[in-house]
Image 1 (spheres, helix red, strand yellow):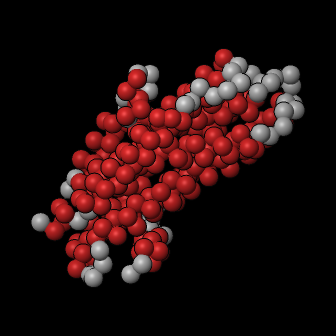
Image 2 (cartoon, rainbow, N blue to C red):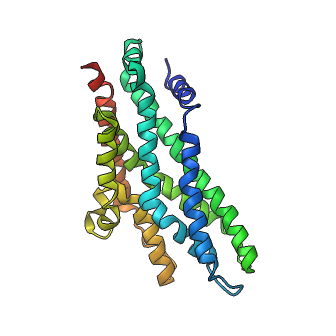
Image 3 (cartoon, rainbow, N blue to C red):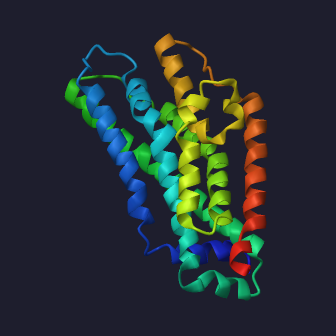
Length: 254
């Protein structure tokens, strides 16, 4: 069976799950609270209102809410097979478990993309409502917002690979959730040290922190340096994905 066929099957499996409503919760909560709180201080003369609202909304979202929601998504997708020994039935089929693991990971990435898209859409709608209510005449910076959300998605990929690797490695879902939570919590602290580049759980938060620095300092160029970050992030993505592919189905086959 082809990889696309396996992805289609996995999407059918999670169609009736609660994953889709889940990915709406975090973006809506953080944007409504962030944009509304900043909206009280906006005046018609305010400049860079969109940048301020984005940083206000995305900071906590990137460090905590987005990673936490993806942890739940990983566990729920893995749980589709663990109930009623479904994974054993799947492994008995003439399907490569390595290919199956990659398909499931790509489904996780698909839901990550969906959540970031929801974040973008809700933010634009909330921002338009606030700017019109406060009389701010600043043009919607569509390219800036799209680029920032794309950055959130791309910088989350290594940490999602790590979450998926931990999820398929541990036999009990609570163990996977607990370890992933322990790795997410210190992200904001690690982001302020030179070790951030080797800690994928803080990548998205670090990106937003750089945007906050650029905004407060009035910098014309971004303080986020793509290199050597891109190389390190790509290496970690490959390592964690390889670990997930290698470990997938091992504990159930014992």
